[in-house]
Amino acid sequence: MPAAANSSAGFKRLNKWLKRHQDRQVHACLEATGRYGEDLALQLYGRGHKVSVVTPLRIKRYAASKLQRNKTDREDAKVIADFCATQHPLLWTPPAAEVQELQALVRRLGSLIEDRTRETNRLKSGPVSERVCRSIERHLTFLDEQITALETDIQEHIDHHPELRRQATLLESIPGIGAKTAARLLGEMPDVSLFDSAAQLSAYAGLSPRQEQSGTSVHKRSRLAKTGKRELRTALYMPALAALRFNPIIQTLVERLAARGKHKMVIVGAAMRKLLHLAYGVLKTGLPFDPNYAQHSQFAA
Image 1 (cartoon, rainbow, N blue to C red):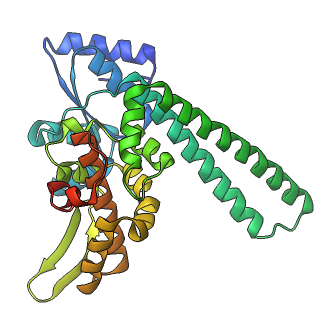
Image 2: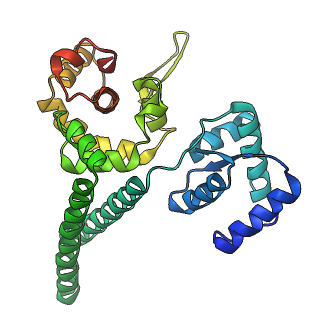
């Protein structure tokens, strides 16, 4: 169909087009583009259609496998449609209203923290102008106030919803995951009941290892696939570094990988993946972290 605006009017136009060309439920596939794409996904889902939301990198690699030569909106749409028809991606379901609100809050917090980091770096670079320095300092003060207020809002939001509070308490029982990380995970992670295993959730987050080996000449070190949800990987990076020191399950993993001569970043990636496995475990079972239980369960694999 001709391009339509990402607005209520545009959604109505799309719905009319679908009714004219399709007399049954459709399976719509979208690239994950943050809130911009989520609004459309919500509209399609609300009208009874099946929806899948996949990472742009996955579509890009699929297009390369099909030897796509031209990159236009029309050609991209054809590739996504072909991917949907042949690969049968997982169906998307909208999170509960309180989770959508939490996601908006934690993403806004992330943006403010990024702004503060940029301004801090500018100040450290030593601007020539004193006025510029004062301007940056005032902006940093403002950002600090906004960050503190938003962190309070996030905690109050979680405390106001019993299920979110229960899940946050479970996540915070894992050494390496504090209140801020728990909030980010709950805002970005789908309902774990949608996944049959912790490995599936790791693949969704793009934390599955990718190996490149061929014969005796190609033997590259393992890397994260990174074909999943970037926000989840970002949320787990710093907690994984903390877990290297404080989480007994992850410490055991680190020692084993280090003894095998694995690269530092491979170890960090493995720690991120293990942390996500443990998060899956406590949420799936409803039980707080127990190193003795986790060490002998599928969630520690």
